[in-house]
Length: 511
Image 1 (cartoon, rainbow, N blue to C red):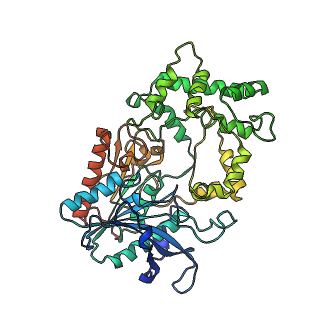
Image 2 (cartoon, rainbow, N blue to C red):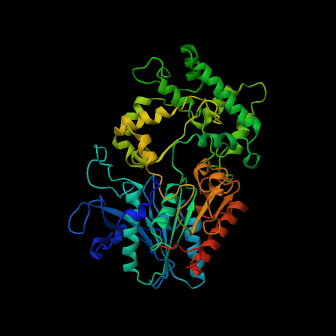
Image 3 (cartoon, helix red, strand yellow):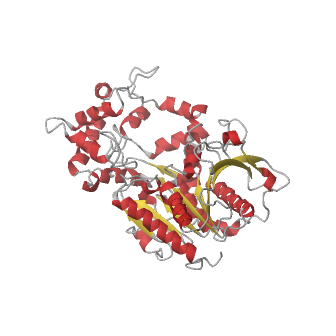
């Protein structure tokens, strides 16, 4: 994510636009059946922005979606852009009922439409994800060389410029996104203040960090949060159980006992599946059970789908049950009766294969190795509730070297902290975070001294959503949403409306 020198001053802005002939709508048969107001198109984009010119250079086809439900006359004054990021590709539901930008962006567009203001909505898929794939073998060496947040921002700049030609009535652009797309949403505004008037950045860890031990520290604290159904007793069961597991891993007999308790699958070529050190780390360093801190949803269905349900299950064994036994009992339910595969070498082979391409796993891993880090370690003496010392940083560094032959991850991550990180170099970006979300530890939040002492919250506002997990307010609006999530959406709408109505408020001198 970052580099302290101001890249937006060093990189030349585009003085050319992509010809309209290079935007090709899909045939009507492939237009989303969910709504006639959402269309799918592709736009030719330079693959390598550093060498491309209009007459020479390789391009790729970037997919985007257009929603005109709130611009019936196709003369919009406002444009809302849902920025794409990691994970599976978009579908047309991204502009109607998805988890990406529905609760904030789509609902705000509806509010404007009711007031007689036309809004056109877009969703731009990130390069190297979904169907926005360059030509070539996706597992070949060098295929991912042009995958970066920097080039994603250049793609967004070109896209916005082109849509301004297609819809010349647009007066103001607002970007939205959650998680990595939230990072990009903020950076588009900070890098191109003349194009984007304001941004909503939800659950975005803009302060990149190689060793993100704070993630599991936060998981540990969430387990003891009464507001989401946690307790000190619940956290103690998880921590004590993992400490017991660590002791068993020290001997062959102990490993065999642990493997039996947690139904560890047999691994071809290994008499003891927990013999290899990396296999032991995979089992114990990232949790013998899954703790839904990042995905906590109090309205979810299922006994173990949120923190409250998990803690209830862990404690129902009573004082006669050892913590490790409680973890094993819950793990069996979470695994659905299937054995638990723990195979480091098999995982490395999978990440080198086409199996890791479709859902974006390989692309995101590359981005962590190349520029982000975000490695969720579990270190001795930390607040991690799992087996401390069993997820060291060198595990992630070895993965980068084995899968991509990247051996200088530290240098790459250290050299890419641009746009200020915790101290955004710009204005009119709204940062929203849930206090249950482990990613909030690297976000722009109030209460963090590194942020509070340097950020002007009048022009770069930030607020917490109590009891909320990872950008939960961007999800589709449901009756089961809590009061805090409803209030968060209202705050987002009000702030964006205020900025749109007052374009000179907190304006960037360079815009």
